[in-house]
Length: 430
Ligand code: SF4
Image (cartoon, protein in one colour):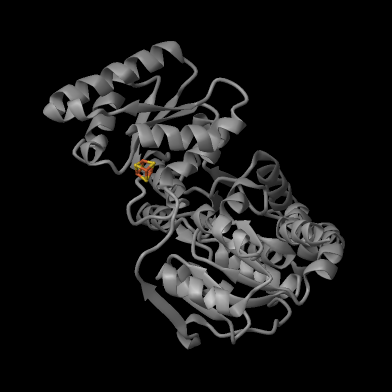
């Protein structure tokens, strides 16, 4: 293969083994994994997500997704009442009835996810068995999967990880003597997926498949010739499950901001032996558009101090983007989990003196934040309002998962998501 020369050297921070990481355990503030349904049901257009849960779960999913319903929703909740505790057999029969009636009403559904939750009456139910049983009765028209969206000890993005990991065993096996293929892993808005597909096509990298696909019929094949690139940093279980099926990861920074996008594309291009000239030609227009889009936000954000609470698992790539492309100052970068293998290229790009914290002791972290008085705090919904009341400007981390933020064309929008709360605060202060 005609491999690329190494990319231009960048000023690097400390790699994981050299970096002091503050590890904390204690009370933590996280959102529930059911939240992933909100972006996943929009992505996989013939899937339905049936939450098996309590009224609380139904309220959460309705209120979180309510404003985004544009047609008949592809999610719902089978509410397990306390009376169901009397007998698991009854609960299974109830669930089968609910699924049968749903599928009769909605023949367009081709994939059904049974999504577990954390109430004790649901934990007793073996949803993987229920999925296997229902798959048999509903096949070949509908395939039934199960995963947990439980809010116990998880972060809200782990719902997507669990969902995609549940799909991996159903991916078709790549043919014997298949050529090398690329799988992009992580739910991306269709417009972003199309942009990446065009870039990979122009580079001559492929064939390219996306997990999750827009339709169940487009599940990408997997096997020893499959190389996968994570588009999201929170897909650890999915990555391990793909490796069990023979696929190999391509480790790279994540495609957020111009620099991250270039490094991510380059990692695949190198494997495919794309020439340096071709890579430059294909990516230059996007890099230039991103540079122009970032310019005006840099003027607003440079020198501003930002503090990340651990929530979405996007914190480290976003911090890298803010520090290196917008010249913001990082006070602390909290992440719920630090995945060494996937995060090493990102950590190497963070400024060396930045405090990276893993896990959470929320009271101690709030104290550190108050003391530092950052200009902007990126945190979950539960912390944002109290901080705002104290006069500290916040950005909801969940909004960063709902918004298209990957790739060159979205770099300016991503910067704007951080600039907007500061603009709002300065308008309020006038
Ligand atoms: S899964 Fe648990 S945390 Fe999530 S809404 Fe249901 S009860 Fe609440």
